[in-house]
Length: 433
Image 1 (cartoon, rainbow, N blue to C red):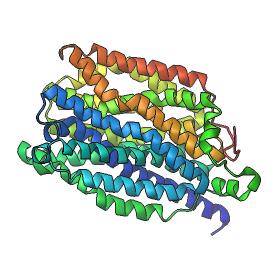
Image 2 (image 1 turned 180 degrees about the vertical axis):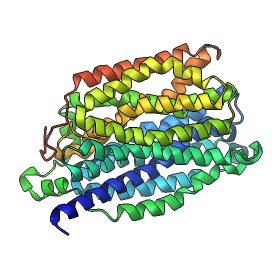
Image 3 (image 1 turned 180 degrees about the horizontal axis):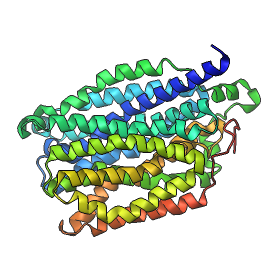
Image 4 (image 1 turned 120 degrees about the vertical axis):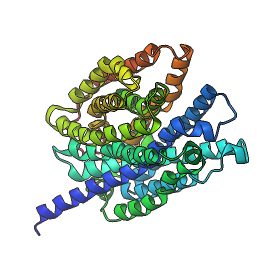
């Protein structure tokens, strides 16, 4: 085998391992979001009225997003100092163990308020893990590919999110076919307990790939050794960090809004819970290919045009999408998820390259992780609770405040994307930009 073929094979293995690892971690993280919408209010906050229990449940969901930037800084620091690969193994282990333990938490009827305490604690661990996961996985794919196809390579990492959503929603959807009492008693726990199996698979996959060659080159050159605190390098250029976070924020507002509020809204308007979950799973499956296609488009036309198309498209479709989700018809609900996730994918696909290309090698893990995780916090962390509160403020009679909030998020991201530089042709080997 010649050197070029060997390098191509290694790039493919890295991209595949990044995709599979990301799928497993997002299965765990997004499974929680679906359970927070449909299960946790009845299991862990059963002593409260329905609206308050939903708000409390979404509050625990937000705890994971609050922890994500901390995880990005923590694992980004060590990822920039000792390597991307090692941090990916650690984050996967933490995510798998936390998710497995969530499936073992007794209900509030058994241990009272301690159930919520344990749930929040494990959700924070999930947030720390996924906060460090994305940056490392994206950089492994990006830095191994290096060339003009790096947007496509990095998009496979983000394709792990809809892939994980497919697995999580499908598993929860299948068990939701059980009688209601059995589903809330033990059925919902099985998908979380299966995290142990996925953890073993993921750790094996991650152990088979090599470290990023660009990172190793930077370490080998003493004059280009990363600083003791990569976070300082990132904060010296706050404009890039702020604009990437704002530019990506709407993608997460759309993603989380559909995974949580939209599902609750559809169920409340007459669509069976199982139909909503399975419809979201089917739409998420289609989104896998949309995310990869968007990454490919970003290599041809640039990151910014594709991101703008997704933000503007979702903003224009916000009201029609809620009409589909509130139709009470399973097929129309699926159509709403398919269109919504398709437009969201135009933003989500290029994000790996879009964010990472704004930072140099010496602090790229830290900068990319922090930018991405701040975007998830701004766009996704509080979105379920905000949307539920806005809807409750109308007495459950008008979706206008909810759709308007998401349209505003699209506008903010569009402006930020217009202000940031296009990174498609940047040289990744530079230590600083």
